[in-house]
Image (cartoon, rainbow, N blue to C red; front, side, top):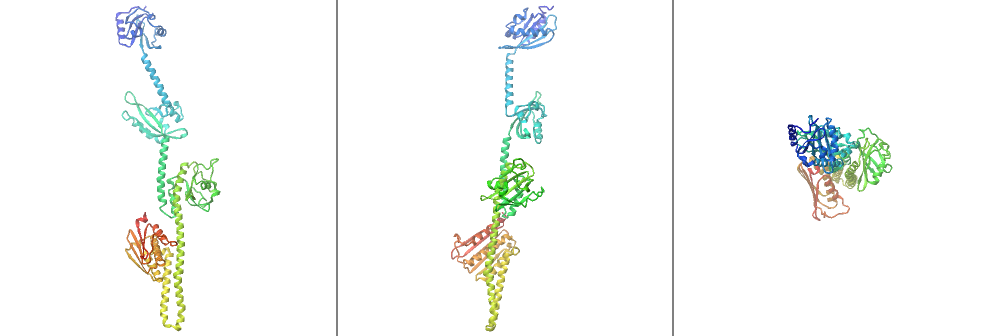
Length: 630
């Protein structure tokens, strides 16, 4: 039997133990649940009793709410099994522990602790945790935790929704598997850079999403340290910036497009040769849009003809370069012709998609085109094709349209220049015909008259025959000089081979023979020998027009032509003593002054006309080397 009282040394031992547990009430019980010893500072606050020995039963001092559960637990303790449990009321929470004691007189030790405050804090913590979890789960930001090797240990709802996987599917897998492969090396380097001192590293990476769609995420990574100061896990917080990146990319693309168009405009307008303009288009269109094949069509009489193309030989396409299409019979051309808008056919072979109703274009999988518009008139089309479906997008359509608008000005300028050259050739032919009639024909007519008169003079005035022969020779030489000058003008090789001084001398010789005007040529320097054909022809025509004006309109009796040339510039000055005019007035029917101005502009020269009524006229042309190079 267990005694009701214990030896003093044992009681002292347990009393000391109770004193060491200030927050607990300690009870020593025998097998009949008599209280042998009660101690601890919490004894008074919980049970309103003092410390010391007691022969009371547990039933006498423990409240009923506590006693019921305790008796069940103590039954198990009596069998040698320690027990721990909590009893909670509306007002307090008690934490109890009971252990069997191997002693002949003492059977059980029970400790009781007031855990009310702790329980409140725990409940608050659990509430905070639940609230945090709800926030994390419902947050639009991506939240995750992973090991230092990138194995996920937590993934919130936002990350699950983006990856289209549940948290159970994600946890235990690699975070790297959610990222684009090309960004993984940067991510690994970032994780290696994390440490106790270098924390909170941020970077932007591309994540896989539904259907392998790429999403841009700005991640912030923070190391979670263990007690030893080592990285236990990595906390990641991410924000989807796809829309921001797309907006930035679109803005940058637009800026790049505008810069490219400025460069393109500079290149396209650097020449007035139509073929060179078309070559430039072929060379630089890929700065705006990539393609497999490209062509330019020009329109005349509602028929679109391909005048330049590229890429068809590479893709072994035949028949396209010889196409002449009546616009109203071809749906995609008619659409651009009527709407003045670009056209994008992403997949020409897809059902219910308007295709390219041209047999030679049956191979095309994706198409983008735009009308070339000048002065509100469609003068052509720019067409790009691809053998890959869905190759072109709406953005490509806008880019091609912007390029076509830029090219339109260059193409139209080149066409006008071609027309102007054709008109100039016609005017030159007409001028030569007039000079042939007015000068050479009259000279030869005079020579023919002299030849007819010589036989008659043999009978009546034989002494006059030598003089008539000299006159006949003079007329035939004059006709030869005039014909030689015209041949110079008709043969480009003659103009190219001769320098400007020789050309002017030839012209002066021809003019001097048929007029009474005294024309003198004065030269300084010899750099004019290296002038280009374009510059020589312009200066020659300006001098020619000046002389003709002086003869026909100014009734001048003398003229001085001065030519001064250095390596960098040439100055041509033509002065006459004619009746002069007011250069600020417009004279109907007199095109010579405008033509001279245009010729000077073509070579980048400046032309100045100085004249007053009855004061003669001076025309000054200055051409500088850098002006033409620019």
